[in-house]
Image 1 (cartoon, one colour):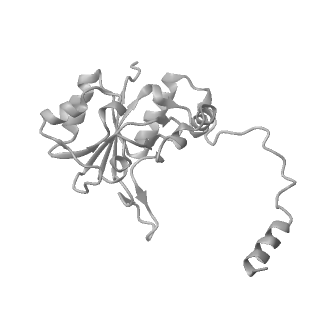
Image 2 (cartoon, rainbow, N blue to C red):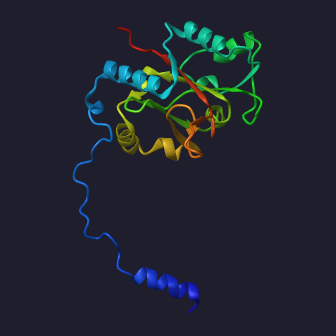
Image 3 (cartoon, rainbow, N blue to C red):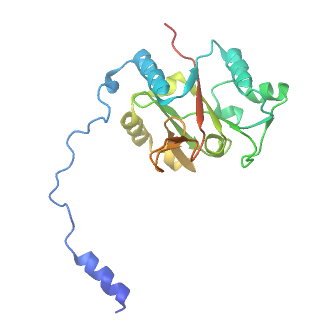
Length: 218
């Protein structure tokens, strides 16, 4: 018997830890209270959390207003990383970009300073957006550029991560089984590891802008 087999044999024969821990009877939400909110309250909480995170947000009046705002927000950019139109909750973005002489860059173009993505869900409790990648919705759009514009449908706002995870489990975990990558984005990329000095844009976009379409108005 080899040394490897001996080690693995001892590990398999060892007593399993934590066998006396009872199963969880009731799972609690990390942020209490949000799970009982209605759609309008969830939207208000989501927008409040975005503001606390240092994100900017815009609620367009209609589809054309959303397109105009996105193009204007790009400033003097000549190229962007962008998801395909089929995966965005606005109609005609690629045409609007073309009319403005803005090129949709290749997925690995490091010269594009703005990325445009959709979102699979938005979490009211933390102001997070959940983004799954795949064909036509490549991950670099939300990770590589300096500025990330996420176009979010207000109907995608849910209470919190636990609520979203439960819906995923009930649906067979499509965000993980049908996607190459799923990330939870909570505000701009930042770190304070070095000398406890907060640096934004350390591992991704330093600015996050949310275009919230189909938002409820008061």
